[in-house]
Image (cartoon, rainbow, N blue to C red):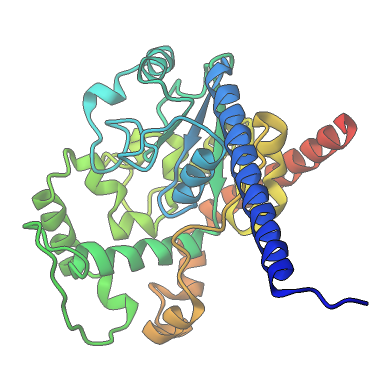
Length: 336
């Protein structure tokens, strides 16, 4: 066999390189076509995706996943419509009917909208206009995350000071319970006001004490869960039953801890096929470094005693999610 000359080797290498470039270009082109087709499908769909974003329960994950699947969203506010997040909540927004919300979303060109607040009385009544989605998270884990993010962001100003300039602070390692006192609650409220939170309702949505008192139930039963009508310790089983009825109105219920299983609902209802990891997930090492299990706010036993209503509502949501996931799995399997 005649050994190849250096010239022949150069030609072969150039051909291989050209082939690799061609394959890469074709993959990019195919990906662009695929994404464009997803965007076209989302825009042409009559129903708008309406996501109830419970604070610290996978809202950023859903927003990013929506964008990955070609949905048009409000990129300036974590997919929340203006006036529907805790920082921007306004009476004008709360007074809109679901039909007015649909028309506003259409005018803005959105195919996916989120609201990070409590439900309004008739908000889930436009079934022909919206696909209603909720993601839930283990209540205690959600509460710990809520306190954790606010002690690092709002309470300590670790990432950005309230006059707009970056600021780093050295803080002592403290128990989480130290961040749930009335003193720190007053600090939180004062600093939230400095950040121009537009209403007391917005402040209440981020309040550490309310966060630890049947928060999911409060979200589902509406404004009175945050306007002072139901103070700490006043949530009853009756409120829990009301919240469970609200859960029955959602088209899609996802469990953050079981998102890999439940995402088939999004495939079934919306045709979504692109998935990302859980956003803003903190590593176990960071969690262990900052506090031990015994340092958690209120402690597991006290939390469970104070949040029996929420735990029952969450279990009902989990059961519904399992049922909806099984139904979606059957539907998608039969369509193949």
